[in-house]
Image (tube, rainbow, N blue to C red):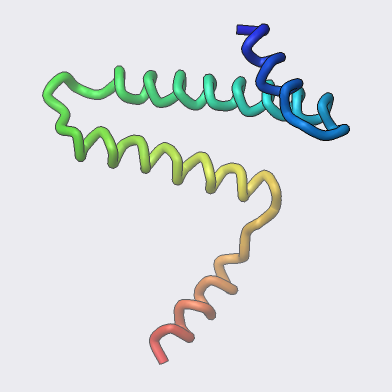
Amino acid sequence: MLATLINKGLNKPGKNRAKNYFRTIKEEVTMQAAKEHMAEIIQAQPDDSSYDEILRELAFHRMIKRGLDDSQQHKTISNEDMFTLMQSWQN
């Protein structure tokens, strides 16, 4: 696998070969982690789960992850600001 990663990253043209190499490794590791996480979620579902139920569960976990990431990066608004925004939608 390492040889594949090296070939993917270093065969890209240009003078940023090292940057491409590390970006490729990061993307590959991230993709592997995502696949493993998805497999865990799917395995946790009951055997009689439908395709749609599994997709909903995967989407739910993704939304939670995005919300937690936003919270850690302080990309949130106060409850008062949300209330004001929702009030503006009703007018």
